[in-house]
Image 1 (cartoon, rainbow, N blue to C red):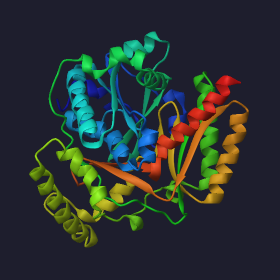
Image 2 (image 1 turned 135 degrees about the horizontal axis):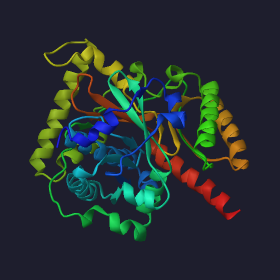
Image 3 (image 1 turned 30 degrees about the vertical axis):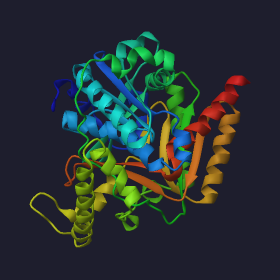
Length: 397
């Protein structure tokens, strides 16, 4: 249902000029009462990542976002990519279509990748009845992509409900009667892992332990200023740069996209898509390499837009960052965060890898495409395990 009238809530929010502006509670607005949160999460993602399925897990985190982009026909709704899952806010008049898409995606995850995908839809009335809220701000990542920031504790509550098999049962999408395939056309996984000149990619999660919104935002602001002091400004710490982008020809890596698009179809469709990917690889090299223009796409802009439209800085009841860094910067950052942790001010998770992963969500190749970024070898998911361990230590003390 492209152009659902309820989406005007997000589109009407002022676009904040800088990510720093999301650390001000005055810039947030309550999510409307008649909206829902749709969440997905790969069950036992840590063990799947350790067995080598990190790219597959990442794709499952992105595929629900792609389906909702196709459902609404736009990027202008609140969502957050979490590496092994996603959080999406949409008007309740789309609930049936959303549930149908998520059920289809869950089936595909199991059949094509042997991954169990949690999928729930939780009404805002449920979130607020449990004493939490969801507040939304809108931050301008680039001229063509504005990203949602979430605050209020509601996302954290929704995630805890989803991950508890007993509590999640009433919200599972299987309770909603609807059957149709999800449209995930536009999900692409064609870039090789992206290294950087600093040598490492740091996936960082920081959750402030403070219930007062003003104090929580104040500490987040302070932490973010420290991060900038350690890593430099966004151009210095950005994990994706034009000069490091390389299209892959790896059968293993390209098979992820192929299985997402064709895993439920006859084998000849899979083979046909395999051939198509290699033809498009050659055209991609030529079109982007020579900056050629077609009737609909200026290919000289694609790589710069990819870098600009990447989602490596996010806020959803916690700070989520993917940063290019050195080993020394990592130790410095960890030392600072450990001090705050020992003071019971925060919990955090930090994972480092040698490269970043990109999963592409594409409406069209001319400007309307966004790129979901995670650290390789587990990234956000492994950082989340790290954070969970620290949180358990606080709770047992």
